[in-house]
Amino acid sequence: MRILNLPNQITLARLGLSAATFVLLALAGRDRVELQGRLGWICFVLFVLSSATDWLDGYLARRMNLVTPFGRIMDPFVDKVSVCGTFVFLTVLDPVATPAWIVVTIIGREFFVQSIRSYLESRGVAFAAELPGKVKFVVQCCAIGAVLFGHALGNAAPTWWDWFVRILLWLALLSTIHSGWFYMRKALAHLNAAEN
Image 1 (spheres, rainbow, N blue to C red):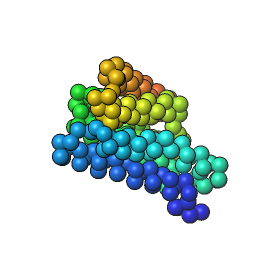
Image 2: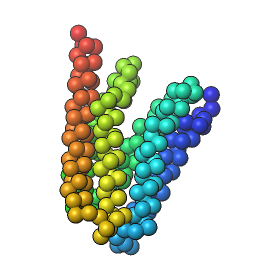
Image 3: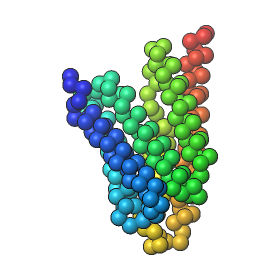
Image 4: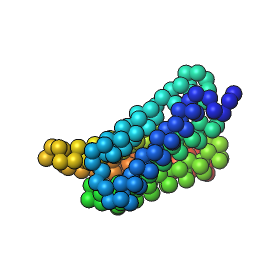
């Protein structure tokens, strides 16, 4: 089974889309160019493509029986790079829309859950992603997409858009905390069972 099969190629393409988004966001910050107009739309489209195809690599891997250890490692890695990386850039570019403390909470949760997953799987315990984690990812992507979309619209954005973005960011924060709590309880259950 080739490592670079079709699902893994899609995963790597998603990583490339994320990298391209980061480059454009970095250029916008360095040149103090407002993230409006063409640049904003390009960033928005790249992020949406990267996020929207997240399900595709996993679906094809299962459907075509092409699940590989490389894919199991890279798929969640790309998810985290895409979301956390974009949040970091948006915190620099627009700290009002994306407060640093929310971004730190989101990144901290990712480190925490990944540490739990690595420890348990090293002991032979399966720790696959479950519904709370998937919901968290979708809500986070919607929040980021809304921020980028608002910047792309610029002055054409409706007056209520800022409130809509804030609501999505709070939902992203709450889903992040909830999923972290869910996985912590799941990990504690496995640890308690192992000790009894």
